[in-house]
Length: 250
Image (cartoon, rainbow, N blue to C red; front, side):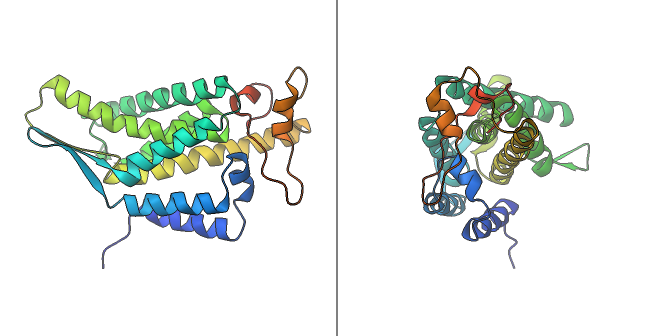
């Protein structure tokens, strides 16, 4: 019996949480409905089995639909819902920082080999190292749920792209690069979930400690986005990084 990838198992678990309404608050803050979330999860799972060949020959390069195209598409959608241009900047810069940190960690722990996957020092599995580091860095860089998710998922996609650049730059005789594919798919799913969970848990904790989101000096539309929805109302906008550094990390 073929074992399901850990990323797909986690997506199925997330689907169950959404079905029972246990992830509604997070979805509201990210401007996603249950139906949209289910559709994205389905695309991620189905797309994980689809690779689009980009080049053949010295370097075989392919693009995984579920591990690269779908996360990029979701990130573009979330960016379109960003509350401010500052959130745009945080999310994109966060993705670059996340990718750079993971690339550096992979190079250091892999003893000069930046290829994604494998084990570091013989026992640390990249499947867990990359997502945890990626999720943490993405949260610190993005802070809001949207920005953290974008930074985490795009950051890991960029690591695959960086690996291709490394192959070309070093003149490696041959190599195979599956952008967003293979073990990278699991890492992208895990990193995105870790980043969003950190934004949710830490952001909510700080807000409860301070008695609610800080409002002094903030635009009215920004505070309207922070207002919790009433019964039957659509989810609130997530103002994102405009709140960071002032006690709210939604």
